[in-house]
Structures are given as structure tokens and as C-alpha cells.
Image 1 (cartoon, rainbow, N blue to C red):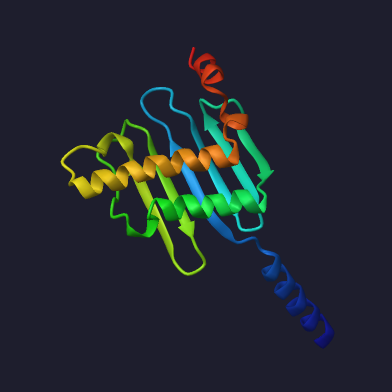
Image 2 (tube, helix red, strand yellow):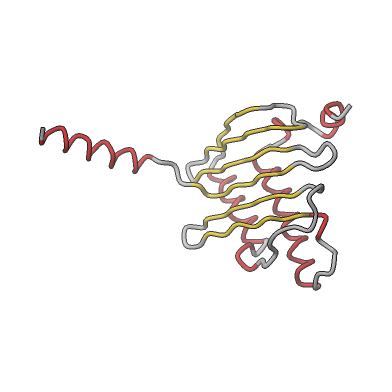
Length: 162
């Protein structure tokens, strides 16, 4: 019986050591129209988990792998956006596209809900600047992971909306 307890403890330790660590997440929510709805989870080991739900070329789950240069580009995109300084939280409308992002740089973690329809409504210049930085960040994440393979090119997206 003692041997069984040791084996279980070692197995649990190995499983915990192999658990992938999340670097970043992004989820695009739908809208009243035909906005693509999907989520990405990017792990520190380079794995990307995709899940598409609406108005995407590929529904369901898929995976890809980013190389070290692409992972560094993800980190650089969050740094360029000054992600940990952004004060935007929540949205202003239920029927517009919004995006949730999460980032863990190994020292800090943050998550932001970005409703792009609210970017210019009653916000200070600083908050508008931060909203614009989020929009650039979100597009950069899509570019780095090669999102078009899953959601389609603009021409393919137009056909999905017909």
C-alpha cells in the first residue's frame, strides 16, 4: 500500500509539471450581425488552441504551434500596447463586437474586455489611446497566429455571411 501512495504522488507531480502554462488568451464575441466568434489560447510551449463557433470557416476545435519568434512577437505586441497600464474595463453595448484578452508575462496577469463600439464615447484622450492600442494588439494576435486559416480570408468571410 505504501508503494501505491508513492506512485500516485510521483504521477501527480509529473502531471503537474507537464501542464501547459497559458501565455495569452483572446476571445472574439459575436454581434447583432455576422461578426466571427472564436477563441484562442496560446501556451508558453507554443501550442495554440482555437475554437470557432459562428461565422468562421472552421467551426469547432483546431490546434497549431507557434515558434519561438512568434511567441516573442506575441509578448512584444502586449508590451507595445502597454497592456498592464490599460484601464479600460467592460463595454457599453450588447450588440457590438467585443474582445476579451488575457496576458501573463510570468510576473503579472491581466484581463481586459474591449468593446470596440465604445472606443470614442465619452472617454478621455488617454482611454481612447488605450482602446486604439487594444485594437492593434488584437489584430496583431490574429496576424501572428494566422487566424485566417480558421476564420477565413475577407473574401471567404463574405461568403459565410451570405
